[in-house]
Length: 227
Image (spheres, rainbow, N blue to C red):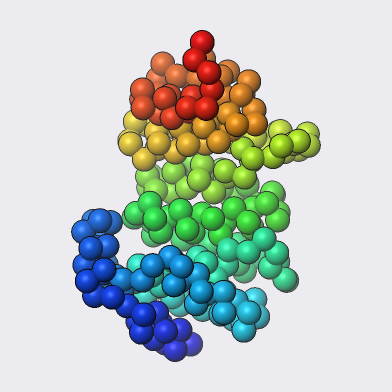
């Protein structure tokens, strides 16, 4: 099923750009040399022509190729606030991807798709909670990246505040993990939270900042006034 769609990606490839991308991402896989806008344009058309089951099947097939742009396209196929019907298939596919994460770019695109599905059904946070204790660093990181929407509610309802505190608890669990990408994710989550909930951000730093890497604390406090 995926071959005609992969052919469309390949037709836009730029070998020189692909070589530069390989050097930048430092992960040994095939790169075609497409830009994000090119992938966006293609996947926008695909979303319009395919129903939800076909999109899920295509996303799965593209992901399994392990081609950089194909994996981004897989994520973009499922990045949509409303998917009808919003059954479990799209979410279950996205939730199966974190063990394959090996670079921030692919992980972040996949998490953007996952963010939409979590907001659509916050009960799915139960599955994400298990990622926090994964032995796979990228899966642990994904638990924070995929839950960024809970930093952004301007007027959170009680259930949203409870979820926010729950995720802050996950971040606290990850504080002793001093791998750069984990610390960066903690700082990122808190930085976004500080824009709308500075009190919770400051409280977290007061309690856990001494155990965090200094760069992560700096990231978390970027938008807050220095005392």
